[in-house]
Image 1: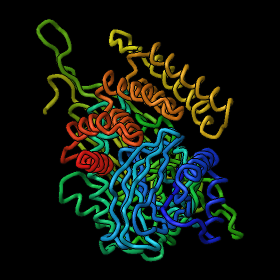
Image 2: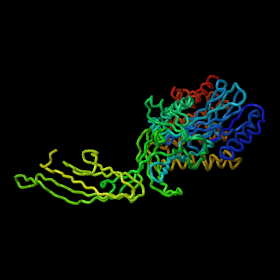
Image 3: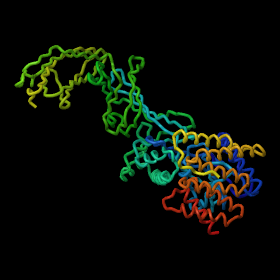
Image 4: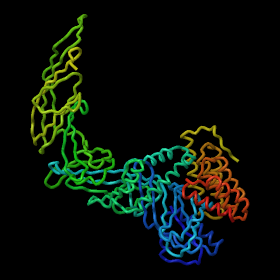
Length: 472
Length: 157
């Protein structure tokens, strides 16, 4: 995207302005030629019109909606206005910018700067030209805002567990993918986590073939209203501020107000610092790092779900006592490692993906099977008793008694917690010396801490009554 | 000129092909013509115009790209200082694809400004009037409101 500014007045401006112009033109060759054509045209037909400056952006902020292909761009530039009529060009050629959402605002001297008209110069496609009257001569900070498609983000996490798997370092990063057709230098990146119903509707309509039909236009009006709403809020005091040590900001202002208005629940993250998000580039930005997060290494066995495998989980809570809890954590991929030697050598534990994790939410990351924890169930005995017959001699009731033995072994050099789940159907009752807990009408769990290298055996007997033998 | 045929099948394949044809025409011929001079500029413009016209003929049911193609044709004619032809193409976009509001707005404004700058103010005012009549709505986006405001100002002159 390119902006060229023409003002009435004498030729000859600052060297710095010219240098900035050249830099900008080199990186946007297509629009440079368009701007050059403008220069030639205006030089020959209007002697008192000249291109004064083509400034780089001073700031740019990207607010990327995770659930849809939509990014709100807010950029500011210093422009030199002459008193009277000024012209400013904005091109969205070769980008995915939504031109109907483009807005111009003077951030300084707003009372003296007024946009009188917009035209669409025929000499080059996809360009608009603002005609701006200024009662002020000098530098004005202007803000251009618009929506674009083609920018997306995803979160990922790295968990580094200590050797004893009781504490871990937990770091989050954000990968921003830019296929919008536009480079964004030194951009502040804000990420919307959660779902905004209105935006989803926009995306749904935007995906339709008739992308610019009446319905789309109606929604874009709404989108524009949403943009205004967000801008209004972002200008307010930032109640959230930086969250201690995590390098991630939570700006809760918009979120809370939107929630009150019943749009939906969402959170706005601001990734610390600024970075250049070039077109056709993917960039991974660090977002937070928490150290010494309490973690539990937890193992599960459930034949019906995982066969003979024992599954490993890391469990923690997204809470302040756990060195987290300052904000919800967005969906993302997790890679887990564990320190396995005194010289801090890491071993890959597993990878998984986590869903959106609200504050104070308990988290369980499934990291795949682990052969170092073994569970071996064996059916030791099976009896069918209490047979009952109807008048035709057919069996109408019976009882089955199963006796199971479980061999459990922890081959690891650290203690673990093992959770064995068993499922029963019908009218059943369980007898065992082992400690167990009923999960629901058809499931029990045996949860047992296992010391390093510990091996143990337990048994249970389950009686299942069928047919007329059933008592419930 | 070429018309809209709503009976054409609006298949994903046709949507994609029409979009690709429009994009390639813009990228390979229309946009480069802005930087070219003399006969090369004319050659690029004519090639772009030919392809835009072909697009409208072959894919008349593709409202969005056809409306863009007609506006681009208008822009090419305007660059060639052929005002009457340009206005005809701009008007055609609004007539044939009235649901493409953003394209209609740009086409009408392009036609109006072209006529205004050529001193044909009465003709220009017809387009400014159309803009105000159709787009002067409270819930329009900021840019549309600005176009309406500018059009209203021209009508007052």
